[in-house]
Image (cartoon, helix red, strand yellow):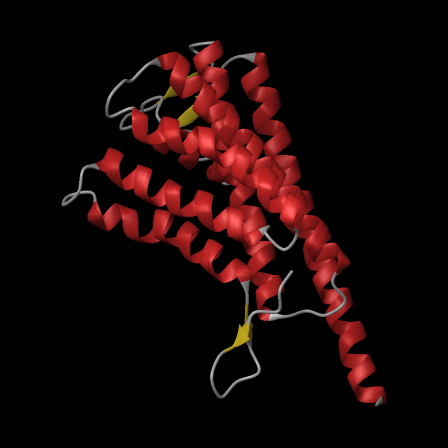
Amino acid sequence: MAKGWRIPFTQVRLGRFLFLLISILLLFAVRPFLEGHIRIGLLLEIFFSFILFSGIYAVSQKKYYFIIALFIAIPPFVLLWSRHLLESPSLILVKDSFMILFFGYTVVIIFSHIFREREVTADLIMGAVCVYFFLGLMWSSVFSVLESIQPGSFQFGHGHAGDVLSFTYYSFVTQTTLGYGDITPITAPARSFSLLEAVIGQLYLAVLIARLVGVHIAQSFEKQSR
C-alpha cells in the first residue's frame, strides 16, 4: 500500500486506512447522536456510502484491486439509495449479498497486505483495526441474508427488529463474545454462523496481535543492532 504522509512534527505516517477507519468510526460513534436530527435511514445510507468508497480507496494500490472493489461496490451503493424509490425484500437481499462480497474481498486484500509488511506503522495498525470492523459488518450482512431466506432464524428482544442496526449490533456482540442474549439465534444455520463468527473473531485477534508483536520486536532488535 502507499506510504501516505506524515503528521506534521511527528514520525507517524497516515495512509489509505485512515479514511476507512474514520468512516467506520462515524457509523458507530457519531450516528447515534444524530438520530434525533436526521432520519435514521438516511444516516445509514450516508455512512455506509462513506465506508464503501473508503474501502475502495483502501485497496486501490493496484489497478485490478481497485477495479474489482469498484465493480462489487456499485450494486450495493445503487441499491442502498434506490430504496427511496422502491423498497423490496428481494432488493435488500441482493444488496446484502453484495455487501458480503465487498467486505469479504476488502478483508482478504487488507489482511494479506498486513502479513506482507515487515514494519509496524500507525497505518498498518489502522488497517488491522479496519479488518476487525469489516469482519463484523460482513457477518451482519450474512445474518441479514439468512433472516431474509429463512425468516425466524433469530429471536429479537425488546427494542430490536430484523433490520441492519440490529444485525450489526448482534454481529459485534457475537464477535467480541459478549453475548448479551437480547438477540438469540434459533435455527441451526443461525447458531452455526454465530459460533463461526465468534471463533474467527477471537482467532483474528490472537493471530494478528501475535504477528504485530513479532514484527515490532524484530523491528526493535534491528534498530538496536545498527
